[in-house]
Length: 522
Image (cartoon, rainbow, N blue to C red):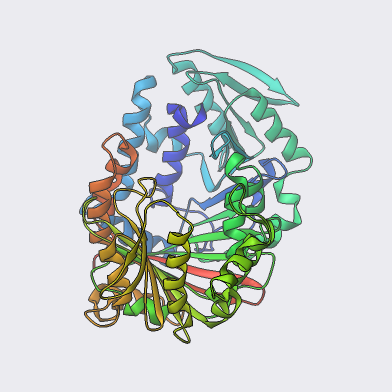
């Protein structure tokens, strides 16, 4: 398994060290990589490809160093990465001396590709290609580390390319032209060599079109074949596809590219996506700002009326076996006096929020506003319909709002509550969260909190569509994530430095765009 091989730490950590500014020289362009040369080693149809600038210069380098210093406190990021590199590789033999063994041959660009999704939604083993400034030095480094490995490597040749295969995980390493190549095994190495000499991801129009939208100011760019990922996602394929389709994504055609852009007080990710159809319009930022001020996180959904109407039409047309037959949904609701099409047309904005600091206080609510009170009135009618049909666990909710609740331990320890009042509907995990959703705007709101204001300002003219309060969200996560999830707990010291997470969405012609910004301490 390539992901666990300590030899990989040499390559990956070396790349991170250079990203952090360990080395000098490099391109005159301080921006991110845009030519995707390393994609020439990726198999055609690869679903994920990442390319990083290993030798940032100028403003990009200065911003990276400033952001890294804030994330790691007073510790120098480059020394931190090298220390991780040396401690990891020390288990295979003599620790790597980065300055003398790696830096002399390391080039300007690195690419990592994943050919497919396999198993339970996991990506296949990566193909890692790192540009070298001196192929000869890189080859000597590979041969030296192979000899020092606790488990033997053997030398082999394919199409004139010499490579080493074996070690603790059976990986393959070699130099192809000016690139140091590392794969999960001999088969994958040969496939990468074949791609470099024939057809590869770099030759595919959907990839080049998507990657051309990447920011030229980024440190790293990541390409996603959304359609390919969904298609290969196993048993969850239909559910994932349905969820994306209802959000306005044509999963058979969709691609996306994300660019990571560091700044002195934030880390920004610019996303550009071809959804296969026109990007959704509108903004839910008004409703988002009206949500309770103490939420851990919130997400606004624009164009909800169209998405809801399409979801209802699909459910009515296809049914939901075995309980709901095709054509039954709308007719059944109509008999109860509920005109679902009319209600869908009246809907406006929608937002989801999470609150609480532990499992006991955890609450989640989905809030929808409408142009009139018909949607709210329909909630009461739906509750009557469900109780009349004998659906287990359904009880009426009265008092501050009208509606119903469903007690089912498959949902969790709290009831799923659907309540309405005036022109607002809330669906909550727990009565408290649902009522907080209905009352949003009457007390302290997100729009009045300092963190939310800072998040909105960081996005500039891009309307905010999601917000996470860093400290509150981390406190909740620490209460819910088990200690067995070591990767999360190792990241906690760095997550504590994130003050907020802001997401803004928009459009650029036929492309949907988004900004994701992680705020750092001032």
